[in-house]
Every structure is written in structure tokens, then in C-alpha cells.
Amino acid sequence: MNISKIDLNLLIYLDVLLREKNVTRAANQLNITQPAMSNGLKRLRNLFNDPILVRTSDGMVPTERARTLAPTIRKILLELEEALQGEEEFNEKNSSRVFRIMASDYAASTLLPELLKLLNKTAPNVTIDIMTPSDVTFHDVEAGKIDMAINRFDELPQSFHQKSIWRDSFSCLLSAANPMVDKFNLNAYLASKHVWVSKTGFGVGVGMNPDDVQKLGWVDESLAKIGKQRDIKVFTRNYHVAMQLAHEDNLIATLPTKAAMLHKNDNSYIIIKPPFEIPEMELKMIWSPLLHHDTSHIWFRQLVIEAARQVQITE
Image (tube, rainbow, N blue to C red; front, side):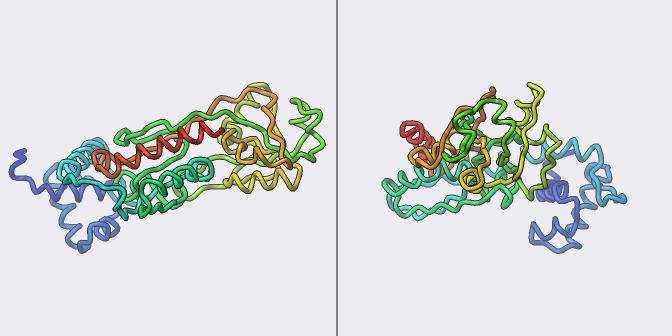
């Protein structure tokens, strides 16, 4: 195969087709007609001497050859886009750039207020557009449509850049009027009702099952290790909702300490160390290789890290 005779647009077609697994959707994403995309698929099949996509009862499914090609093609296109990006000087004082951030509720509550303070001092015209995990996909981040995602991540695509923002322990947040406050131990913890709150991943979430401990996260996995299970009354993905329920309904909210510390000066709450060991969690920021060398993005990443330092100083 002589690369000089290959239409490089076909690699773009292949990349999108393997992600969408649908000719019409792939055509729409590239703003070309469906017949043009069908013709592109035909040329790809001739080029690789492989069907690429095969129609099954589950829809179009990539062949083994196509699945092998997919990460290599994606890497080539990302590196090419990065190389073609022009370098522009960035002046934060005069910039009106909009930075789009996917942030979990936990990250938005603890980190972003400090980040906004720094922005007001150094870049008064810069705007932040905060999105929830259900608003975006990994592909949005990879394509540079989202400047940064800030969350807890179990697995990440290898192409992403990442940096740890901080590690956080866990604390129990209770109403000061909760009768368990004065006798808070493991037995009291297990005898209480609880509000569950945890991260959300990318895309639309699904309902929780109280018996599926492996999907409930650090707190419940830690209890399972000592043969215990808590009584979860409410499941929520919103930390402020969890904290409010702990206050009003005598539930216990076991959550990252930095979130609990948002109420450190409120005498109607009590913050207590959990009566069992829970491993620390790690908050990370991730971004696309397409943005890695962008001067405005480099400045913004540094500002996020400085905001994280300020959060830890003021704790």
C-alpha cells in the first residue's frame, strides 16, 4: 500500500464511522451527504480489503481488523490536528475566552469558588461554562469541545492528559440535633439511616441497587470488607442535596471531607470521622492532547492548580 496514493480524508471517515457505527450519523457529524459517506465506506473496504463494518441484528459492528485499526487511526489524527494548530499569544487580562469545564458536583462545590476568585483578580473578562458529567462524553473531551473535565475517574482513554488536583479523606456530616451525635460509633452508624452520594460518570446515569455493593463506591465497599452494610434511605448525585437531607431528616451523609467542610462554620452541623477506615479518593483534571500546547489552556490549568492550593490552605 503506497501512502502517497491514499486520500487522507478516508482516515477521517474511518475514525468517525468506527465511533458512530452508523453511516448516516457519521455523515451528519462530518457535514457530508449520506451517499458520500457510503462511497467513503466502499473505498475504505477496497483500501483495507476488509468489510470494516458488518450489519448484524445489533446494528453495524466493526470487524476485528477495524477494531485493531481504530486506536492507531485516532492517535494519528489527534497528533496531526495538534501539529497543525497555530501558536497564539495569550493575554489573560484582555481575554474574553470561555473555558468549558465538566465538573462533578463535588468539584464544583469545593474547587470552583476559589477558581472564580482567582479569575476575578487576574482575568476579569474570562468566562467559565460549567457542565455536569451527564452533559458530555469522553469524545467531547478528546475532540477539545470541552476544555477540561474535573472528577474522580476509574478508567481513562490513554490519549488524555491528566493531573491530580488533590486527595481527600471522608467525613460524616450529621445534624447537630441527631441523637446519634453523642454516641457515635460503628454500631450507631449502622443503626442510622443514610444518604448515599457519589460521583457520576460520563453520559446518562442509571438507577442504583442497594445490594450491588461493588457499584456503590468507596464507603460501602469499605463496610463490606468488615462484613457490614449501611441502611441507605436516599440515593442522590448532588452533594448539596445530601448535606441538606442530613440536616433536616437525621440522615448521615458520608462524603469527601472537603465537601463536608463547606459547613465547618455552621453550628447546626457536626462533622465526625467515620468509625471505620475508608480509602482516600483522588480528584483529577483531564484534557485533550489537542489543547495540551495551547497557551491559554496552559495558563488555565496552572490557575486550577493554584485554586486547589488555596482550598487546602484555607481548610
